[in-house]
Length: 248
Image 1 (cartoon, rainbow, N blue to C red):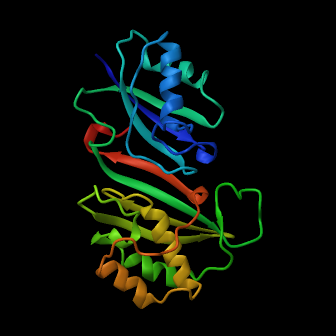
Image 2: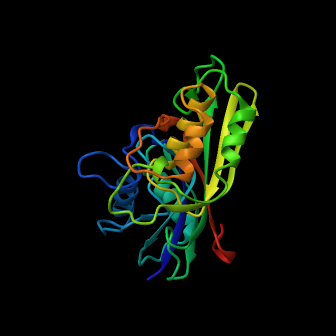
């Protein structure tokens, strides 16, 4: 049975995250519903590269599904987009080997978080309006995160998750006019991890937490720490990397 890999862009504002929920609308549920429609009733499971939170967006989410169809990939894209709501779009589709897995084959995930320092409001559903930020201070904090760390202090505690060690390859703040962007890339991320990191770093620049306290949380991880979590709407899954030919 052919395995298809798709690249998806979505505005997560109206969705309760990626993963199918019992009662709330999710990106996965909508995609599976569309595939059921175009396959004339077949139930097709869509596996994503990771679970984005409620309200989080994606520029290049990746997913795969198995479907015994004669449709060409160039026909699947318009068929899906023609049935999807305007806030979800399929940008790429290709047939991949059976051993490809959108989640487990991924080697690196990239996120970007948008903070707005000025009073512009037209992108308020995709930024965190923070006011003025100290970029030098933020980058000093961000640089300390690069490498392998236990991020228990900066994630939602889940007793079922035993391994909380992640390797960060990129952790960088940049200024684009009134917008400050935080880019982070890692082999894996824990639940709410990027939002906790962004919120805590911003709090340090606002003198609501000291740099020493931040470093202590990083070097001496603790469960259920009360740190600030930034709003969901500023966070975007930017891209997912795969080894070799698995990259789009």
